Image 1 (spheres, rainbow, N blue to C red):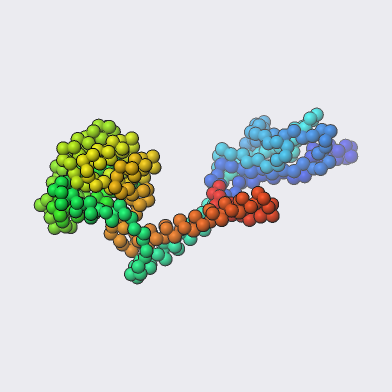
Image 2 (cartoon, one colour):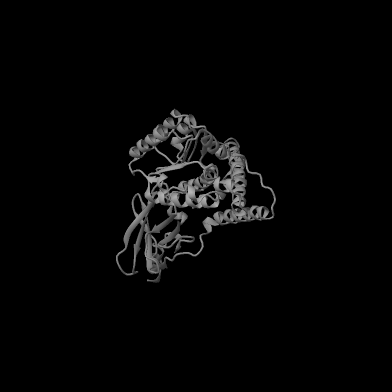
Length: 378
């Protein structure tokens, strides 16, 4: 009798081991399972086709099939579970002629983790960023001269305003079709402040047609403050900063009409533009205005480059506030960003080289995988 009981128990012990645990470094709702079939139950005559995973909330109730994996895998991650709730599992090895069932394991509870070890690389990179920024900000505070490359479009602001003044023509500034929530619009406000202050000093009229009423209000306050700083609040005219329309081509037509009537000597296209960019820039070119454009819209940059005298490309707009009015915090941040971009570019070049060599020479592949893991965020 004991011998038969021993055989009965052993015939169900097909697995070397089976374990389940709360998935590490996750946000909860997940349980991981691992198992291994004993060697004597792996055969070519009756091979394992796949493994089925069964789950239940109680050990003595019916188990539900929640998934499967192919025979070459011995790991499964059960997702979409409720946290702090007990679950039981059983693994079925489906073979050609029969099925091998594991013992029931549990209870296993899923919980969210405080720290994701898979993103340790992000923490390290963040610390490096923080240290580099602090280093350059401290250097700027001490008065050390930090090199910032020349941005021709920003250097030409004084010349453009001066030319419009000499010609006796007004200046036109446009934010494009951006809203106040767009970062590029905030950057354009910094450029507008510089232009408005210079226009106040020269006594030149500044016209700003707007696509969005909130941007119009921000522009009015920016220009008013610039005129006060220049000591010429009497020259400020709120009527020159107007709202046109929120229709794309209606706005373009309105700007073109103002350009043809007023014939400005200098035009600044600073903001986010769409299909109307070439229409606006060509109209400005037709009246002989000096034009300085700036946008982060990659698809519109070719048109501005072709039709305008100067063009601020992408991040040059974001650097405008620091470039036009250097302050230690902003200058240090700008230098820190440039330094890190250079480091990332060098790492990319080296990584491409190592990736190429790892295909040709297999002994280099571990180095490539190491570098790849550093910049992989799970």
